[in-house]
Length: 203
Image 1 (tube, rainbow, N blue to C red):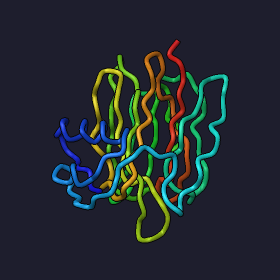
Image 2: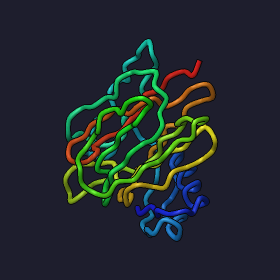
Image 3: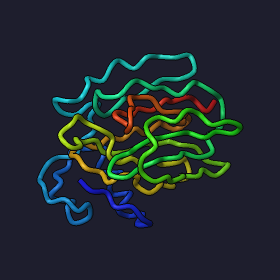
């Protein structure tokens, strides 16, 4: 499944909406560039190579959702902080190579490798992350990875899709009113193998 990068907000929103439900890819192939009649669905883990999603630990500071993806790489988790997220830095190519949250006054850890090209999704001062959506799939017959990701904010903005989006499994993590995405957790090696979100209250 191929996700188009660029400024076509309508196609990004279409992808965003489809990630939350099972939809025949044949119906959206003209927009997404893939003619296989597979289904796109929200799943915690995909395929025989994917890890079963562990029970999300509960924290006083918030809670975790996910992760979605495969079982390769090693575990990672951003620390619980009260920093305001200012930007998300993504390295991407065929897959999502790495993710990093930068928050004032500091930057959190880089999760993944240094391949691909770098992109930055900048948040305004009056907005916060409310959604992380993406696609997972196999690569070179070797396990499952996060092959595309993009972000939504409290102001209704969406980032470009980062990564080419190969694979048949979509995921969406969307927080309710009064909450925000405070960090990432999952598994990574030279790419991002699995991705989940850390959620905290804004009050």
